[in-house]
Length: 460
Image (cartoon, rainbow, N blue to C red; front, side, top):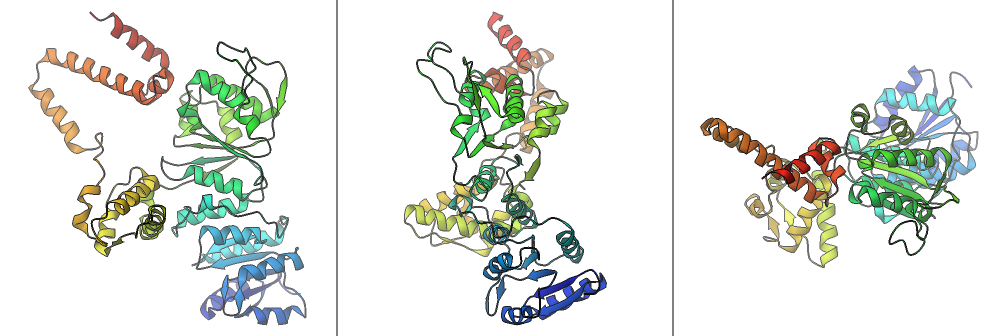
C-alpha cells in the first residue's frame, strides 16, 4: 500500500467520483472509484480498502443495506456516507448501520478530507449497533444546512449516553430532539419522562423532581416517587431549565455529580441512573453572568449542545414543512389537505413565524379544518394571519410618544404607575401567581417584585 491509505468511492455520479478522486489523490491517498455496488463487491475479492466513501441510492441496491453488511464484515475499515437525499431518517440509519461520518451533498472537499483523516486515526465506535426507530421524530425534517447539522449530531449521539443541552427559541422542536435522542440511544427501552421548570411553582418543583415521603408536609398523605425515580433506566427531559430556582439548581447539581438524592422529608438515599437532557429558550451563559444560574451546573449540563435554528433562518424548508404538516393534519381529521399556490408559499415566507414550527403546525391545522377552497391563494390568507407583535409593532411606541408629548408633567407619574401595575398583573397571571417566575418575566428580582406588590397594597 502506498500513500496514506486506500480509499474506495462508490457513487453512480461520474462527476462526483472524479472530484472526490482528485481531491483525495492530492492528499496522498490511493483512490479507486466504482459506479455500482456489484463492482465494489467483485473488487473486495482481492482485499478491502482502508476506508470507504459510499452513496445511498445506487443503481443496483441500497447503500445503507450494503453499509450494514460492510460494518459487520470489516469493522475496522471505516465508511463515510455521502448523499443528496439527506434527511433525518437517512442520517440515523447511516450511523446505526456503522457509518463513521455522514455528509450531505454538495460536500465540501475540505470536510471530506478531514472526515477521512479522522476516520483513519480515531478509534472507531462499535459498528452495526441498532436501535429501534420512533415516530416521535417524524416532524424532524428539513434540508437546510442548519437542520442537517442537527441530524448529524443526533446520529453521532445515538452511540452515546452523555448529558445534552438542547437550545432554541420556543416552538423550534426541542422536545422532539430530546425524544429522538432517547429513541435512538442506548436507553430506548427505558421510560422517557418530561418535566417543565416553568410550569411548576418552586415549592412544588422539588417534590415533582425528587418525590416525598408520607407526612413530609401538610397534605402528604402518601409516599410519592419523583421524576428522577420514574426515569430510572431511561431519560429525564428537563424543559425550560433556565427557569429553575437557584436552591433547586444546587440539589440538581449534586444529583448529576453523585447520582443519588433524598426524597423530600426522607432520610434514605435514592440512587438514580437516568440520563438527563435539558432544554431552554434562554441564554444560559447570560443567566450565569447575571447570577441567576449556577455556572457549575451550566457546565455539567452543557456537555454537548444542540442548537435548533428558528424557522425564519431556514425558510428554504418551508415548502417541505407545509407539505408534511398539511398531510398530517389531513390524516388526523380525515380531510383532504388543500394545495397552496406558489404565490401563497412566497407570501408565507414573509410571515414572521415568531412561534416557529409550532406556529406553522397550528396554521396547517386551521387551514385544513377551515379550508378556503381546494387551492389556497394569497387573498385567502387574511383570516389566518398571525396577530402583530405588540412590542415590535411600530405604532405601539409611536402612539405612546404622541401621548407623552400632549400629556401634562403630572400625567407622567400616573402613567408610569399604571403601566407598572398592568405589567405586574399580567406577569403574575401568566406565571399562575408564581412570584419568582413573574419577576423573571419582568426582568427584576423577586424581592423587588415583593416590595412593589407591598407598595401597591399600601396605596390609598
